[in-house]
Image (cartoon, rainbow, N blue to C red):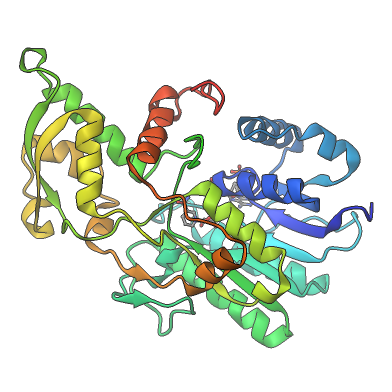
Length: 378
Ligand SMILES: NC(=O)c1ccc[n+]([C@@H]2O[C@H](COP(=O)([O-])OP(=O)(O)OC[C@H]3O[C@@H](n4cnc5c(N)ncnc54)[C@H](OP(=O)(O)O)[C@@H]3O)[C@@H](O)[C@H]2O)c1
């Protein structure tokens, strides 16, 4: 081990959307990172290298210098023996984002059994600092202002994913209480691309809806009627409700800052949008971007299950996430704000320009079907 680096952190999920950004920030800060990559390493390492290239990092020199140590492993049953020297902390960023169980064991295998295995691994190797990435939606259907605290009693959940992440939080909490270890939890809301470049490698949620709106536009546009297309379409939800989307670079930056400042440890952070756009703002943005008009808000129950052909193009395809258009809790983010103030970090407001950049990136790479677009060439 080379002592010129900050102490070693073992990380899961580096090949994920969030993990690659956090890894980038760690490497640039001088942190030594051991990354658990799913086998075979011979595939995972080049894949990670390509991902980091997209966000401006050449991984090879970090591997050569020993600042970045790739190791093979997977959750829950293949964690590596730590032959890389002392490990100061664990950052658990891996997860299965599968919303509902479908017989393949997910999301429970990775999210719950995986968290249990990693905690046991940390315990066995006497690691006292555990950082976990959860989700803001471990609040389930809870309403009102959601505190940066454990949700107890158990909320009702919309998805198996939320339930598995809540169960993992409770496991981690119990480990900290029983072992005297320190647990810091990060709870992002819906991640979207880079606020500066628009880069994303995930195309769910915000992107999925946008893509469907693009299909709707193509389906109903009539060149004889100019650029604007009129579609009288009901949107389930209230115009003033917030849409909690948050740029990936902001989330990674806060995680990096918190991990590298001991006084910020031992808390829960809502990595949510402090000024989330409302449903109405998003509607106006989508209409502007795609050249549409005629949408209006209506009661969820009035729309879902009673769709017109145009509406069903959107809401029946998007049905897994439609509850999120009607359930929009307000996330307290006092802990995150404290970090922002201490580090003079401004939230990258999702204004028209930034939202446009996000969709321009997604359309330039054909919603993830092509990987050609890079932050430099769009
Ligand atoms: N994306 C969001 O909008 C969002 C919102 C809130 C919270 N989060 C949380 O943020 C964290 C990162 O999410 P993400 O969006 O970056 O997810 P992602 O892009 O789907 O990446 C998931 C990562 O976990 C790894 N992984 C999955 N199953 C594994 C297993 N059984 N063993 C070892 N590694 C495994 C994947 O490895 P492979 O590359 O080998 O598949 C990948 O590196 C997660 O904890 C997620 O719950 C995400």
